[in-house]
Image: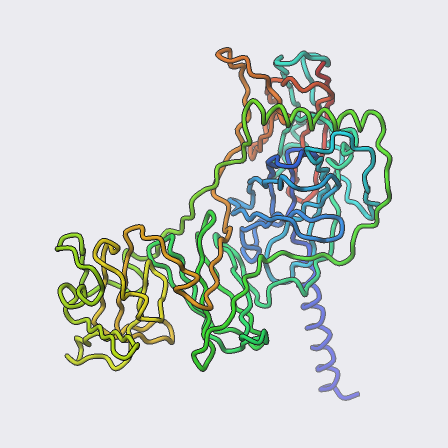
Length: 552
């Protein structure tokens, strides 16, 4: 064999080794998920903490998606949280209509070569299932059990408490154990006899790569929006211009070109809360396309195998008591989810995407004008509006050449492109808060506009479906705004309302101290209370310690 051929083979083997090693290192990245309890009643809010490991690699991004599925990989709901220093927290509202059963929480990040999701199991008891007798229980294969925390002890001032009594905890972490910890989580909640074991393991799951986005993106303080456009005969529409507008902000506008399968993608930086998105798509010939927005769920390969389980007396009694507690909690306190946060996305510049307007007109400063014909004549000098033979046109003067543009300007209403100029015909000064006009050619990426005419409404209700044929109008959940779990930890003597809390304590700690004393109040819910300490080490081990007390 020639030396040249040997060198080629050696280089090929070396390259293969590097690629394989890189892939393995990518696959070792994980998102650990720690819910505040292992059960809930439908309609509850589940709080959680997340940890990205390893945390010093910026390629992982900092956005963690937490997804609730059933045992057959059917998607139910999802939230996305941004982490700080590779740690995050958030909440997941559990649908009120969810039936009783065991469900799967899946945590993951969208990053290159991430193929594993760490899954946690949770029981949901439907609030009308008071006489629950059996459930399908998953047969767990290859669980990863948490390790016993060496030398860690959790002591309480006693083992049996009454409702409304203070539990005092003394937690001891040996210095040799604490020095290797990255973070820790301490929680106290009513213990479910059916799901107690769920607290001390996770289940690795292989992500179905066909469910991942078709592009590689690292979500860092931002979120990927994806979808599909199709023609009116439902075939994919490649090469379509897809326009995204968000009227909840200072006019946000972006566009992309759909790929060969009709798929499109947008990346929104610092978008938090639930916003109203308007997505329009035009084919290369200018025809409207249908738009479908994806929720960006991931799938896992294979369903859980299950077997039926007849609940024991203790398990049935617990389920009935928790359902009753939730019923009375609603009766006395009402139906409470964390308040939905308004959409926010800080603008990158002080002006809208079309830049500083040439003119801004505030119609309320002038006499009332009944329609846009009068407005264009009296207020918008340089704007030509014509209605002739059932055809409406709008043209702007090009200040660069002192002649009218030959084509229509980009027309916006509350930041949303409107392609039919007749839409504006009936607008009077009472409908319009202000008008921005740009009398110059504007460029946005590869798009060119013959000036800009932007209207801002006076809270006028608009039938967007009729005004924007072919547009998709979506209510989309972006990054979850920062929030904290509120747990009552003192007795309110001003009212005699019963207390039906199921979680008494739930805190995360970055700083590990050898000795820590904590306290919490029990509620009117009786039964066993599990006090748990879960810690993540710097070498990605999860340590676990638990103490059980009882409330009578």
